[in-house]
Image (cartoon, rainbow, N blue to C red; front, side):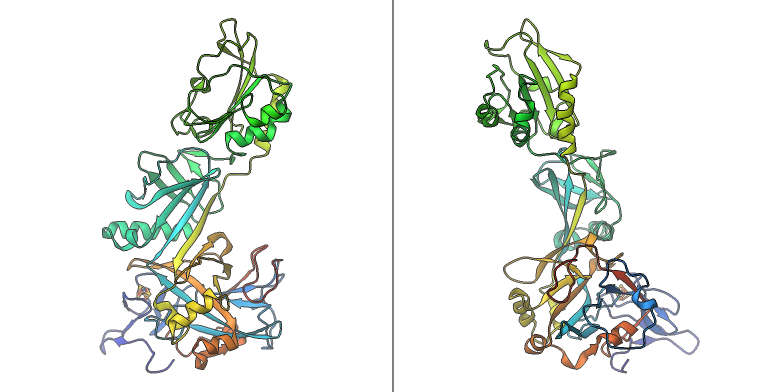
Length: 501
Ligand code: SF4
């Protein structure tokens, strides 16, 4: 640590000195033995220490002995074996200082550089996908945590409801309480913890990344097999000859077998059924009921509510199967002499088809993608000419990873990316009380490209030093420790062109 980068100390002869952490704009004065406001840095014997261990990724699905525990004589380690993630690496704020680790490694005989830093993101959030047909709330309805608005319901996707959470407006644009609640919900979600959310005029949720969502206290088990129309198409041939009519109830597109093209091409006989709802194309109906948590994401508890009076071509004894898109709800009816459906026990011959729908449903999960923009000052920790990093990322000369996890980079300006939090190491995220999220980010490129974009070449250190826990001379903190984690199964290795194992 150089005199010019060492933390500022404040104290008297009687009182132990406090040190000043300058890793974020809060600039805490931290007393001996205490941690700063974010619990990420502490004062240990007058030294600023990053409390979470630096996380090293190992290129093995199942390391028998973790890299850090093996006998290691200091030999050269290739970038194909180990990767320094930014988790626990620290932040150099303000960003004109080079990033905490600028690591040189050899990968498949190529000289590579990885710039490693924990970024402070005021512009960040989470896109959450909840696999359920159930209506969670209207589009644009507020999503709340601890009673505060932290995001909104956005457009539904195929078999999933979507939430857009966080973002700069909720972090900084509302009250202090709103900012804090947003930051704490994002932090928990990104670290894989369970979070309770409520949607205005909608559902109560409990979600954790990679786990089944809980909607109004009920654990979701299955994601629907398809919309009502798709379900009719998928199983038309299997139902033929077993039942006279099939209605697949769905909030978006309810399918009616005898009218649907899938039924027609295999010669399904007209039944005289009439559906209350907006007919889109033959056998496909929109808006048969209100959205809800009943049959197929509607508010229906009795599916007969969507049937109108039958046309004269219907006949007594006509059999009808009504089923939801997950197979969770199913009922069997026969028309009586007055052409009124009467519920009967589900015949054995139809049970396998309902089970087949259930079988074809995937498990319902909540997925969390962290989304952030690294287009700001963070780039100065990588290069003296920030826009050259943006250009290098956009032209794919520089690979961005988030705790070693792959990112999906948005086209257009800036460095705006999304990354699956379940692909990242444990507790990859932190926060600062500004409020903002702290997330790991690594930029990897060839040595020549790093030099060309005006990289901080004087601060490059060998991978072996970083593995030993030696911090760069630009860092004014010490590491508290290191830990190693295996690469995630199936995830691409963050350096090099090797395909996923
Ligand atoms: S909040 Fe954390 S990072 Fe920010 S100055 Fe305080 S201890 Fe340092």
